[in-house]
Length: 258
Image (cartoon, rainbow, N blue to C red):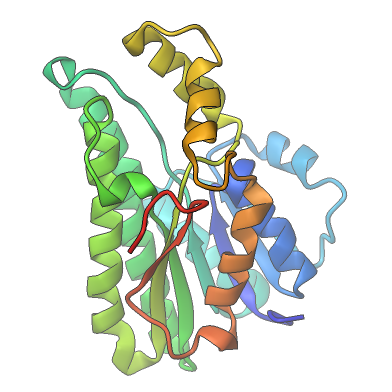
C-alpha cells in the first residue's frame, strides 16, 4: 500500500476520474475526503459500500470561499491532517469563439481556475502549519497544451492550471510540498455524453461520431478509461515522487508529445 494512513482530499470525487481515484486511494490505504457539488444523498449512494471509517463525504462548491474552508476544516477535524490534495473538480463547455459569452467564461474559470487555485492555497497553508510536507496534484488536460477553435475558454482554463502548478511548486518547495499536474487525453467518462452532444451541434455531426473519431485518433487507438489515470494519481501522491515537482504528466495514449 503506497498511501497507507495518508489523508487525501479528492474534489470532483462523485464520478468519473475523481471517483476512480477515490477508490484507488482507498485501495492504497489512504483516508479520503470525497468532495463533490452533487447532493449529499447521491454521494451517500455512490459510496454506500465504502469503508466509512476511512471516508468523509463532503458536499461543497469549490467556487465559494466558505466551502473551501468547510472542506479543509472538515477533513482536519475528521482525520487530523492533510497529506494529499487531488484537485480534480472541473466543468466543460464549448461554442464558436464569436458566440462565446461572459457567463460561460465566468463559470469555467470560477471552477477550473479560481476554485482550483484557492483550494490549493488553503490546503497548502494547512500543510505548512502541520509540517511534514505534502503532495498536491492538479488536474489539467491535453486541452491546456493547445488552443481549439470551439473550446477556447476550457483550453485557456487548463493552461492556467498548468501555469499555477508550476508557480505553486516553486513557492512551496521550501516547505517540502510537491505540486504536480496530470494532463489526461480523451477519457471515457459520463461527461463525454455532453461533450459529444456539443460537438454534434457545432460540427453538424451525428451523435456518437465525434467520440468515435477522437478515440480512433489516439495513437494507442482508443479513449482512455478513468482507472487508467489512477496509477499516475497514486505515483504523484506517494514517496516515489518526492523528487518530482512543477511537472504536468501526460496520460493521454500518446496524443501529446513533450
